[in-house]
Structures are given as structure tokens and as C-alpha cells.
Picture (cartoon, one colour):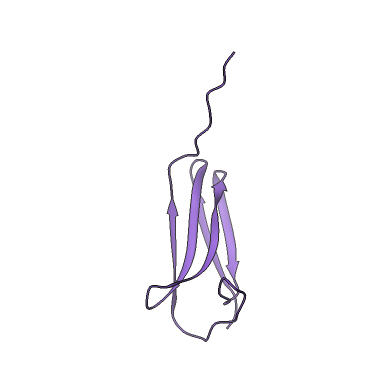
Length: 77
């Protein structure tokens, strides 16, 4: 299996989650789970699962979500 480049963009800083799933709906790899800055981003999936094992060729789906903007505590003067 080759590599797959996944691109996405967000308009404001937010927590982004992007995972790869097999056709049975099992998550096989988590590509992103972090707060990201606004703009364009890209990740490359090399066909390996979360443990680093190469998966058999087949159909896989990428699912991404953007959660609420990250919380930051109020500053006191």
C-alpha cells in the first residue's frame, strides 16, 4: 500500500481530530488529535495501523472533526 496525503484547513485555532477507519468502522490509526492554528494543514498516512503494522490493501475512510476553539484562562491584571 502506498501513501495517502490528506489536506484540510481551518479558519481559527481549534482542536482537530483526524482518524482512519476500515470499512467495518474500526479506527485503525489516529493521524491528528491536537490544537492546530488557522490555515492549511496536511498529513500523510502510510497504510499502517496505530501499532505500526502494515495493513492489507483495501478501502479505508478518513474522518475529521474540528472541536470548539481551545479554552484559555482569563488573565488577571
